[in-house]
Amino acid sequence: MSTTSAGMAGAGASGSIGARMGRGAAWGILIAIVALSIFPFYWALRTGLTRNTELFGGGQQLLPENGTSLNFKRVLGLASDAEIREATGRDNSASFNYLLALRNSVIIATIVTAGQVFFSAMAAYAFARLEFKGRDKLFFLYLTGLMIPPIFTLIPNLILIKNFGWLNSFPGMVAPYFLMTPFAVFFLRQFFLGINRSLEEAAIIDGANHFTIFRKVILPIATPQMVTLAVLTYVTSWNEFLWPLVVAPTDESVQPLTVALGAFTQQQPGTSPDWSGLMTGTVLAALPMLLLFMAFGRRLVDSIQFSGIK
Image 1: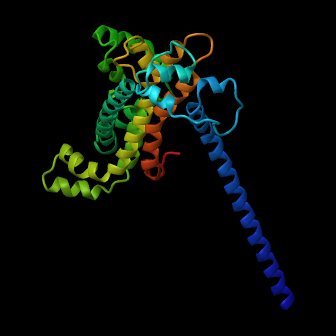
Image 2 (image 1 turned 90 degrees about the vertical axis):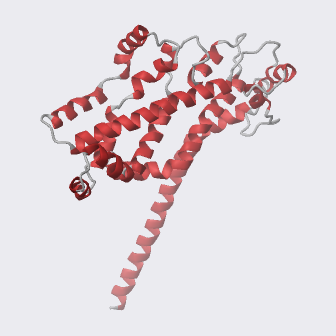
């Protein structure tokens, strides 16, 4: 009996050690993945804190030898001509109106997000709750839009926007993305299908129509999922590059940050790009999205898991 107990105790201790080693290995792999993911952003920040004259003449240490915030002042338009020459080592330097591009990105992303979330919610409610002939077949046909590469619709959309006279304008920027998208409708429909129908039946007994049910019953319940969709849509719109480049290739007054950064790279004088200024602009462009994910990251994970999207 004692021998058996000792053997079981030994097996239990061995299993406990194995479990701890497994958890330790999993945490080590996770930390390594996180470090690899964060390192490019850190290196961009490190480059932004270094003068151009030191980038090509100094080493590649993890920390900048003589850190400076001059590049951030320069990108934000707060530096004098003398400070710009000190930072770049040049008498002439490319210009980058960060605040104007930031304003444009905020306007475009906000309008697109508001339109997509609202119209996608209405379409998702119709596909989840309204009964009409061919509903499921229509939904399947609508979802096939997920399999169409966006590049295929670029030229038709561009011709349509040109015919409307919306080139180099905010309406031209937001028009193709303002209404619902297949992913957004599918995401919200999955959640709407799980809502207890007794809530809607009680509202119908009280005399509510479908729009009232949607506005006063469904939307309050679906607020977390709609916030999640809003964050995902906002980030996607913020990072869009090809469509704004095609619609507004020359007008800086409507160009978002992604296009403005590309233009900033192309107007570099000489053969060596202004890497410090470019990396500074990149860090400042990514910072709002990082703050957004820090604020809503946990809600994003929970809502996506609840909606059944893998």
